[in-house]
Image (cartoon, rainbow over all chains, first blue to last red; front, top):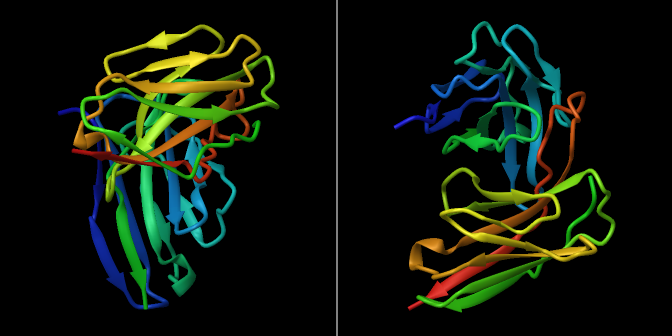
Length: 112
Length: 114
């Protein structure tokens, strides 16, 4: 079934450690996105990529980095995790513009 | 993007139509109305979107008032699996610089009861 795969499903991580959340899509969508979801705050955009080779900052980019080496993959890296990065992270993709965004099932990350 | 207002929660009976209202009184002419839902422990799922005409797909119908200040998402025959949080989102056309982000508000918690 076509869609978005995120890994890991969940992770407990010690503060200060480096962590990469993986996201792969098989729909050949140009645009990909990373959101975090926290109770009472809804989903907030971290980083996005309109096409392979380009990335941009969302509304909460600090402490996160992304890369887009090819169309299918859009990893999100926490260089040095902090407890405030405890959240559920969702990856999404779309054909860009006004096309609907399709989401993965998320990675539940706890930073201790 | 224009702000949206939705009821916090609503119940509906299984097999009946569920009508979910959304107010977007400050919507601009180039802003689309999108509906997503999020079932517990899953990622948001796209349902439908429209500009000014009513729209229908296999999941739902979207009715937009003539002045575009409000809309209603209709689930024609609600099932227990339709229990979710439903988000009404307004997006501006042609915005690339902001990454085409979706701004999710609080949504409406819909509980479908047997």
